[in-house]
Image (cartoon, rainbow, N blue to C red):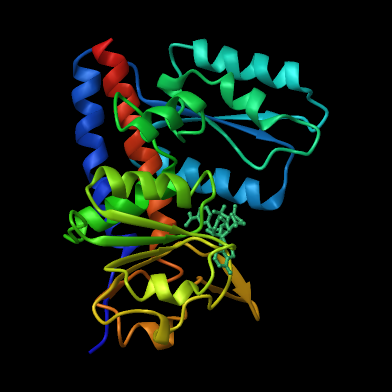
Length: 285
Ligand code: NAP
């Protein structure tokens, strides 16, 4: 038996196809075109590539995209001012700050300048706090949100299941664990100080791995039938691979995401969904 492959590209396309209808409904109600503003500092090639992907995925489905390219010489005050201005612009629905920031800038200071209602990548403490409390209108970081959306659309039930999350970063592991908890999973979070990682991963009904370590999880570390979400993005011998060893895990798992083509495309799709949601909430006032 081989795992069912969870095709993130196909599910992301399905989401993209739903966008124009929701945009039309917003426009008919008199709302402006939902638009994301992406603030990028400098021209790091990975950032430029990611910005390009966002631009293509947004413009293709009729959403607005605005690039705010800022010089490396910008300081904390200047960056906060630019983000505050974008937040106050009625034509801007969502503001995304590309991370990581250059070392001389304060991430905390910057994300606090983005109004929570426009913080479509869920970076601000207000959105993180609402996610933690499981209350109120909030946005979760797009990669984590994309992972649970993929499970939902693939029909994988998490309520009552044991979800094991490997990784506790602010942008992937931690928010993912909170989203799974909100969906009534029993959640275990593992990290570098977890001894005997396999003892936990073998108990998982749903295993989400966001560690950034190629082949961290192999076939002898998972239970038959597990649903695996692999968030890892690693380059090994010039090839893109995840954190889960596909060859040894696929014969045992019930379902799993490939790398590439699994959780990656879902990040962009979740950003589309968060931006639409922001536009709908803003239209409601
Ligand atoms: P990160 O900030 O480096 O966090 C990695 C987490 O994994 C940390 O919590 C770390 O534990 C844990 N970890 C590392 N090695 C481990 C090990 N051997 N055993 C158990 N836990 C371990 O990375 P991130 O930003 O969360 O990203 C994780 C991966 O997802 C990376 O490959 C990244 O490229 C990828 N990613 C993908 C997307 C996407 O769109 N699919 C988006 C963002 C990131 P400690 O906290 O103890 O250090």
